[in-house]
Length: 328
Image (tube, rainbow, N blue to C red; front, side, top):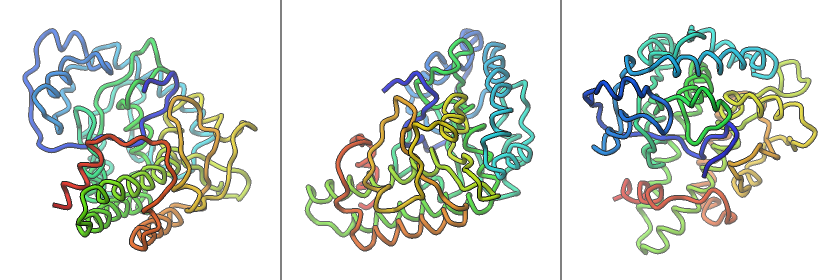
């Protein structure tokens, strides 16, 4: 599904074996623009998920896109982002004028929380994604959107991943919450392993995954947090923090419904990715988020995720299969 807004898909990518693909002169000229990068197309054609970041392939248009995105977000971050995100941006020492090197990002991030950004060529099935979080690895897209279409995002790009997600990964409490998501995915696999009937296995796996995807969407991707002074809210979700238009809209618009997070509501609430979100949920702190992920896992064990409401997100066969195959 394509969206004319900065909204990412429900789940991010992840993969398996680092390789280096030979670069051609034509690839260098083409750069690493989202959906237009020969290097990425070749990696996918070879089935390579974990890749190197061929930094020399970024062309001037790619760096210009980063400059424009970073420049227009700076003031909005100061106004609408939660303080720990701002601390994370400072910790990472992101260059506002050039696409970041992942090795530099990791040099500043890993000592704080153990997390590292790992370059990927594209989509990663759901279980592998959550498992990577458990290992404190964040699958990171290395392409960047077209500089002429900054608000048109057909799939995640390096600005969404590095400027939207990764500053939060420098915060120990938030990082621990991500790891706990990975633990919950392994609990789901243990539950799936105990289901003998194949049809029931698929049905329950789909319901559990739908609940996890919704929770992840309304927290890590589009979450709001109570402001430190208790007055109003600030954004911590990466989908908000990487979107020029939706960041302000999420905090200020009277068209957005904002409610304290409730587990039974979130796991049954469908969402759509092709427009600004009309409903958002508020956590008190990242410590609160960590506790909520633990509650999600306990509800999973108690069977409370086995029959969540139908609707979005629609899960791919590969996503469902990734959990079932991990249980084998």
